[in-house]
Amino acid sequence: MLSKVAERLYWAARYLERVENTARLVGVYDKLLFDLPRDVNISWYSLVELNSATGPFEERYQVRSEHNVVKFMLADDTNPSSMLTALSMLRENIRTSRDVLPVESWEHINELYLYAQNNIRLGINRSQRHEFLDQIVCRCQMFFGMLSGTMSHDAPWQFVKLGRDLERADMTTRILDAGAAALQQANGDSSVNLRQVVWGNVLRSASAYMSYRRSVRLSVAGPDVAWYLLQDPNFPRSVAACLTQLKISAGKLPHSKALVDEVKEIDLERYQIESDADLGRDFRSYLNDLQIQLCQLSNRIAQTWFPA
Image 1 (tube, rainbow, N blue to C red):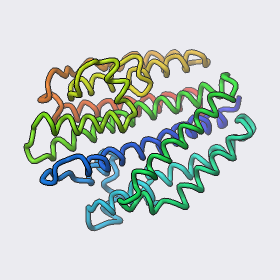
Image 2 (spheres, rainbow, N blue to C red):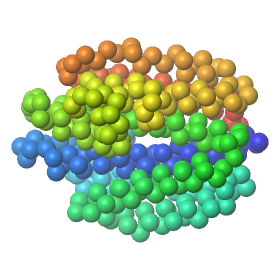
Image 3 (tube, rainbow, N blue to C red):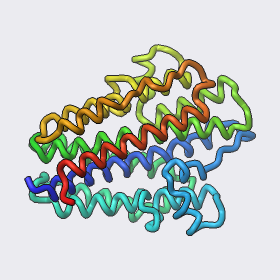
Image 4 (tube, one colour):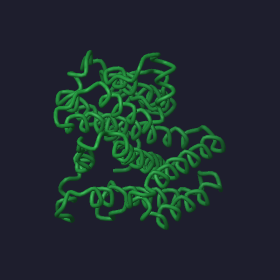
C-alpha cells in the first residue's frame, strides 16, 4: 500500500480516538460538578493544561471560566486539539482514503460530523452536556466497531490499530492526570469519600468501573485505579494493553523491529504507587514523561512508514 494512504489511516484512527477521549476528558469534570461537595472547587483550566494548550487559550480568552474552557476543548477551531477540529481532520482523512475503507465508513463519519456540528451548543452549555458527550462517545465506538467488523484485517487495518492504540494510551494518561489534578485542587480535603468520588468518576469516564470492580475486587481507591488504568493487561483502555496491541500490530508490518524495541523500553513499573500520597505532583510528572515517550513512538512510526 502507498505510504501516504497508510499515514491517512493512522491519523484517521488517532483523530477518532481523540474525539472520543476529549469527550471523556470533559466528562470527568462535568460529572465531578454534580458529585463533589459544594465547598470543593475544581479549576476547569486544568483541562487546558493537561492538553498543553495554554498558549492558544490565553491568546483567545481572558477569563478561565468553565464556559470558555469547555468551548475551547470542544468547539474552538483555533485549538488544534479541540473535538470539532479533530473531527474535521478525521472526516478529511476518511474522505481521502475511501478506496481502502468499507463503503459505509463515509456515511457513518458524516453522520457523526453533522451531529457534532449541529448540537455543539448542547456540549458547551451545562444542562445537556452529559447527553451530548455520551452521544459522541457512543457514535465513535459505533464507527470503530463498524471498521473492525467489516474491514479486512490486513496492512491498512494494522495502521488503523496503531493510531487507535497510541492515541488511546496517551488519552488514558490524561484522564488519570485529570483525576490527580482535581484532588490537588480540593483545598487540602483528603477525605476517603472525596477520593472515592474523584477516582470513581475517572473509572466511569474510561468506561472502566465495572471491569475494575470485577478484576480488583476492592472498593475504589486511587492507587488501585492508577494501577488498573496503567498496568492491567486485560482492560483494553489501559496503557499496558494498548502497548501490547501496538507491538502486535507493528509485528505484522515490515521494518517494525525498531518500533517494537522502543515499545518494550517503556517501563510502566518505574513509578511505584503504594498509597494516595504517591498520586500527587510526582505522579503527574510521571504521566507527563509517559506522554513524551508515546510522542516518540509516534515519531518512530512516521520515520518508519510515512513519507518525509
